[in-house]
Image 1 (cartoon, one colour):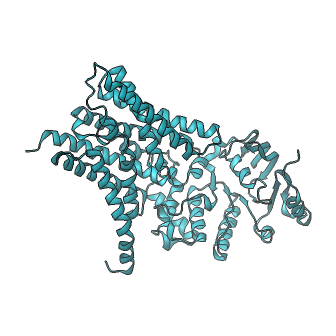
Image 2 (cartoon, rainbow over the protein chains, first blue to last red):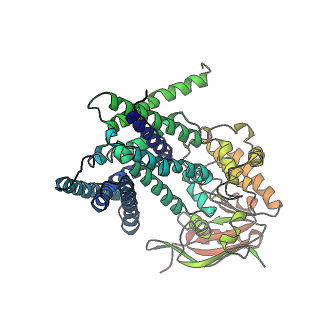
Image 3 (cartoon, rainbow over the protein chains, first blue to last red):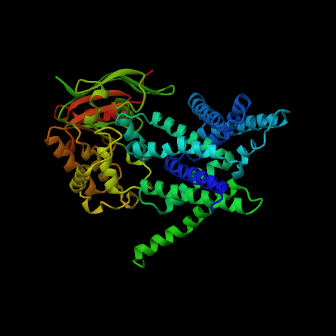
Length: 280
Length: 240
């Protein structure tokens, strides 16, 4: 018999890992890897404010997180465009400021007498046990369509990643595509928070894509492989942390992803060399 | 008379630094135009501003007498090779077929006939046998020919190329020129940023000389190159 709690966690982990892997491919190929980190840190104040306004309603927490993530990115873009500061400087600052504000608010909430606040801190570090059926429903409703959107708009996504100037010359604003991509990343980061946590969500976006990059010869192949790696690590990590006591979920998932990325970095070039020699 | 590209009073600045100043241009249909000028003269900027890739301070740009938005489908743009991540996981054929992206709407994937067109285009530029190669394994010249194949798939009427001969081998240069002359023979308009003054009169029949301002423009046969070229390359920046 399948443990129903484990079943819920497993499905959530597969969905989060899969969608993150796919979107992470876009970020890695666009050389915007730090962006996921900035968004993830920026979501925390949103979670706290949504909690203060609406209580522990999973949908409202996710919406709060997404909105805050988008505001964070918008501020980064705004400051970069209106000052002489470089993007990495602004992102580095933004991510600290938002995280700081988020931690202050979360600490404040925990000290409220009324709070059944158990679990809010899991938005920082992630906790599989905190994942409930409602989270899975949210993932199915808001997370899975992200894959659909990427597949539907494939020519745009493909050209956007490869050659933005050309896409722009064809009449599509690279800026607009950028905004949509950042919005989608904000959504999946927000959905992944309860399980993986704000601190490690960016690694779940990047590591599967980095691993897949070592093997893939096409972007679609890379995206597919990254989704598979993300989903597999998600379910494996969830299972490990649910089976053994005191092993946290988010970090386990992320460590598995990073392990596969490192393994791929070492093995893939040798594998290619062997194929080229005709040994395989 | 309708021009392939006509520009009025174009001024472009990066921050406080003006790059192009009061530029007028009238490039006729069916010519092969070279844009020449020293480094930093605003050649690439001119192209980018015309294609609205760079914001302009003032000025009006028309292609075939219409605004850019109305004629985009007829314009093929070949960016500078350096602007691309050549380590990107993509094959030669995939780059070429990208030329068909957006032609029937941006949510349509390329069809079988698009792949056929891509293959035909790759044959034309001499890369037929490299179809399945990742672009990372190509030489600089082969990369440039891949770009040209993508533009061919687009079946455009105006071709705008940013330094197409930059860093390519002699074989590629010959192949590119042959393809471009073939297009011109079919009545297409070619506009290219060009560096090599030796080959200028052989490859091109129209000249647009720029150095922040327009220095000279016209059919090369009507221009005294021995006067225009020193003039173009001796002016310094924008007069205050």
